[in-house]
Image 1 (tube, rainbow, N blue to C red):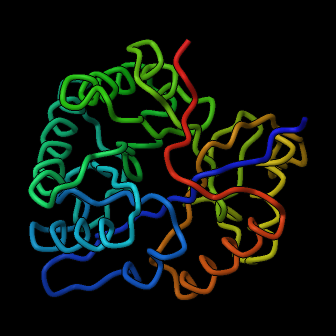
Image 2 (cartoon, rainbow, N blue to C red):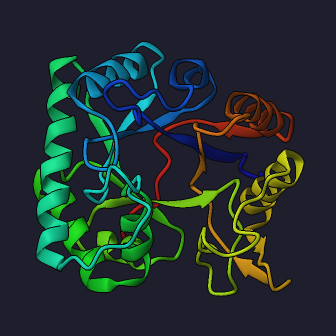
Length: 260
């Protein structure tokens, strides 16, 4: 008997800061199954972290720490020349901060997913990947490590015995080696909602994605990232959730690739 398709739908959240409001967290939460909550380095502050944790718990959405580079101005999307030790330290610090709020509200931290430039750096830099995975392992070894499908971060997590989730992106284009097209390059983003959703359906059901070069790239999709800060983010969240269900794909949190 053919097993049904399943996928987790995650969204970056809690990325407001002080007087600045970003994203549509409360409206989008009913349509996703896990939330990656900013931890104060690239976005968020203590009040925002607490509020977002509470909202996620109210909606029974799995909570993840979303540690980033210390770059509020650049929203954590600019690369920084950090050492592996610095990557470890900043990851421990940020996981610990969010974990405290989750525990205080009676919840459990489900996963860790690096943000932005830190995520992309760790995808291709084994030393940074190992440092981040080590930080997760030492702070909360029960957590699932979310990383780009096929990346160095996934490999590092698996070597330590962490559960991992292979992440794919709805609104990003891919290179022939399976990495994301850098945002500074043309055609890095898929702006057509139908095209983005079709890309997700194919990744989940067929295990392939079409690179910008036209090549088909093998890919595994445990969790799909959608972004909550776009002009049409809520509409897209509604559309992709409905289409996944129409395609017979179960949408649920907790999906992960077992360690060997």
